[in-house]
Length: 282
Image (tube, rainbow, N blue to C red; front, side, top):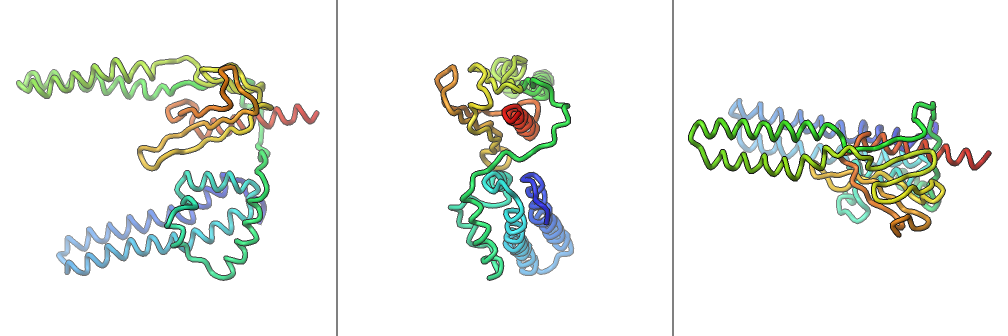
């Protein structure tokens, strides 16, 4: 197989592992609900529900090892792939007990022992197609979507408060007004800020708090996902080779509500770093 990029390997993982697991869950529990309407034996329904969980986990346990062999065997940047696979909930952290439920054949174990040697080599910046669309400078701001979302929430609460007052429900009305005031004074000001939060350019990266740091001085610039589910947040993890204008050797910036999206920010950073590398090699 030809060399895979990290993002292509992750997409293959979702198609091989997560999408089928989700489909099994939908079909299994959908049938369980349907069978319950037929007033079938409760023991049968319970066993059918449990078997859905078992089949989901069995699929993951078998397919995840197949994906690991395929992905890590054909990707250059195995460290980046592992980090992103954990963030996107394809695999678990090394310390997780769930890793013990993976099902490996003897042949797969032999292949994996050879693949593991790739982790002894540092990642490189993978070549990325630069069609010139990304400008010399990209300004990253807080997403305007949140501004309209919070505004709609505040207006909606005020309308509901008015209706509650008309119905004589003063306590509910006061609660809704309180939520509106909280949103107006604490939430809305944070998202209507249109000042640049991060500036990416051919010359380097400038954060809101510090002056520009050249790409040659950027040791690491990774997009990482912290947490799971609705509580998950995206961060820009920066390490510098020397301190910035604020005396810091790095930064950890919450970019969950920034525009462009975290994925696009990652792509833009790679393009700028690639441009800087090409300038050096001239």
